Image 1 (tube, rainbow, N blue to C red):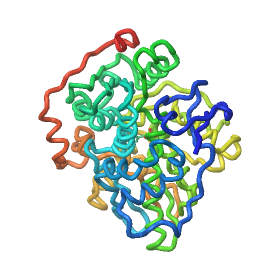
Image 2: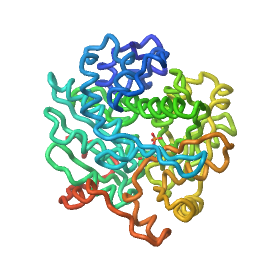
Image 3: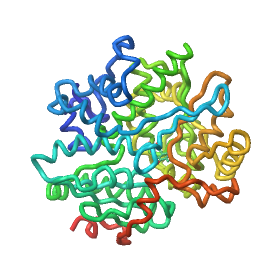
Image 4: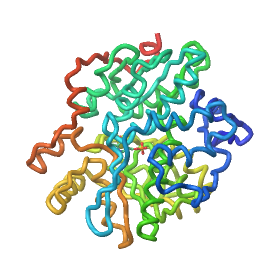
Length: 419
Ligand SMILES: *Cc1c(COP(=O)(O)O)cnc(C)c1O
C-alpha cells in the first residue's frame, strides 16, 4: 500500500516513511492510495481484539518493512479493549477509555509508539505534539522510556482539566511538557510551523504524534471494525455511530472503516460549541474559526486538521454534505446530558461523550452507538457538582496523580521549545 498527499496524488510514500514524516512535503496529510475492501468472511469471530485489528490493518501494511511486526505491534499496543455498554434498547456507549490514560487516544498513541520505536532503532527521533487535553498524556505514557525518542508536549495553559494536566506533566526523563500561553489551535500552529521549517525538522529529526500522523489514525479503524462486525453478527442490523469530534481524527477512522465495507450505517459528528463544521455544512464555505473554551475541552478546536482528509475522501462539497452530519452542543446541554444519563441510566458521561448523547436525540430509532471518548473521572470538577456523587477514580489515574509534575510555561515561540 502506498500513501499519497491529500494535496498531490503524485507524492507517494511507503507507510513507515509516511509515519516517520508525519506531514507530506507539500503540507498535505497522508492518506492511503485506496481503501482496501475487507472480505468479511475472512475474519475470525473468535479472534482477540488485538489479532482482529492485525487482520484489519494488514492490507495497510502490505509491502512495508514494518509489515512483519504488525501482529506484535497490535499485541503490545492493545492490552485493553473497548466494551459496548447499552444505555437502552437502541443506544449504547462504546467505551474507548480503558487504556492507561483513560481516553481513546491510547489506541492511536500506543500503536504509533510501536511503529516509531521500530523506526528509532536506526535514528534518534524528537516527537513534537500539541494537545487539547488527552493526546498529551496518551503520547507521554506510550513513549515514556522508549529508547532513542524524545517527546515534547505543548498544551494550552489553563485550558485543560487539572487531572489531564497532571497526566501530561508527571513523566520526566524523555518526556518534556510546555504550557503555552495560547489556545490549542496556537499549539497546533506551532507544531505545523516547526514542521514547515526544513532546517528545524532535520536538525531535530522531528516527528509528529498528532492525528495528522497516519500511524495514529489507522489503529482507530480497529474499534469501529471490531464493534460493527460483532454487532452485525449478533443483531443482523448495521449500527450507526455518533462520534464526539474536535480535530476529526476519530471520525475519519469511522468513515474509513465504513468504506472498507464494515457494517456501519450512518456516522454522525457531535461537536461542542465550536461550530466550525456545522457552519461549513450550512454555508458550503469552510472558514477556520477561533476556538472557544467549553466543558468538553479536548474538542475545543476551531480549525480541525483532519478536515483535509475528509474533504479528500468525499471529493466535492455535495458528497461531503451528503455523508457528514454534524450537531453542535452547548455547555448547558452537556450539563443536562450528564444529569439525565445519570438519573435515567445511572451512567456517568464525560463532557465529550455527553455531546454524543445530545446528538443521539436528533437521530432515529435504529441502533446507535455513541463513541465514549474519555473516562468521566478525568473531569470530576465538571461532573461531580452535577450528579452530586463522587466519581470513582481508576487505579491507573491514582498512580499518576501520586507522581510529581514538571513543566514550563512559555510564550508561543518555537525558539523556546526547540533549543
Ligand atoms: C481528542 C478527543 C476528542 C476529539 O477527537 P478528534 O479525533 O480530535 O475529533 C473527543 N473526546 C475526547 C475525550 C478526546 O480526548
